[in-house]
Image 1 (cartoon, rainbow, N blue to C red):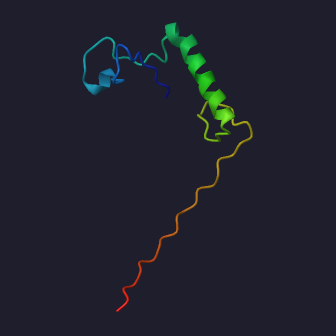
Image 2: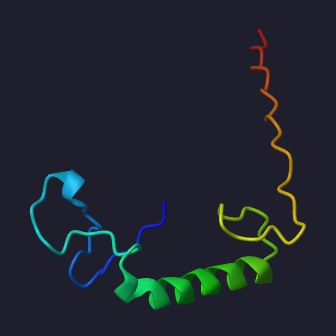
Image 3: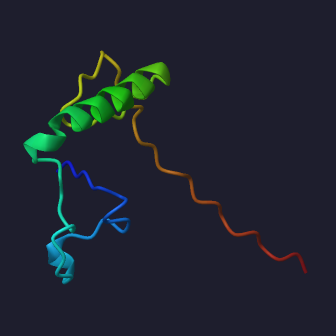
Length: 84
């Protein structure tokens, strides 16, 4: 879920679900008045991800043919045995 907050009015990014009662505590991502700003920020994020060849894209971004590396498990080190 995309979230967008006015950090001047809601610096802690609280939502009403957090138990605070304040009209400024709202997710602005679905507010048509902020659609242009949201699109601008999403385009900037995608531009940076492309610049850095970041394959970990958000659900609504093109993958540009990049595939994330396969996860590998770290090998556990065997504890050193004490020398007597």
